[in-house]
Image (cartoon, rainbow over all chains, first blue to last red; front, side, top):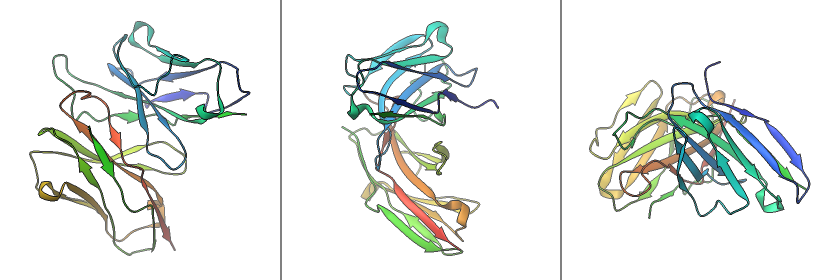
Length: 119
Length: 116
């Protein structure tokens, strides 16, 4: 399978605990995105990487959230001191954009998501 | 700011019926792309179609067709002869050339149920 993969698929945790999710993008893709989707809503942008550089973070991403993409390959999203409001599906997507181009219109390929439940 | 509105929360049809999903978008940018994604119960978003703001030609791809009208800022999506496997949540999304030109702005989605 050469698509975007995410691990774990489901995570149940208690309020106050830290959690970490992993995303493995399509191998040749240089851009990686994290989105959050709550019940009955569309995905909302959280952050994005161009190779290993994190270039933009949404205001949705509080200081309890941190994302990394070491070596421009897989990415991790960590949530510290989880709150019940963090319960959501966390989606990862990747795309390939030619260097020097904005990347508007590039198809983003999505993974299956990690469903987080905070009790 | 960009915004996508999908006024239809849920649609239910009988197999073989045609169904149109509505999407209205807002942006001040002149260069942008519009997308439709499908999210089956498994949760993974599947890309369906893409259109850029300079191409208003409507097309048909298999059972899918779309109607892009800049004058009304609408990008409607039609499934012809619907099948049970089409049951899913469908999202319209916008990506613009200005500002955060890498993120997709999604609507809230339309839940389509195709009954046998």
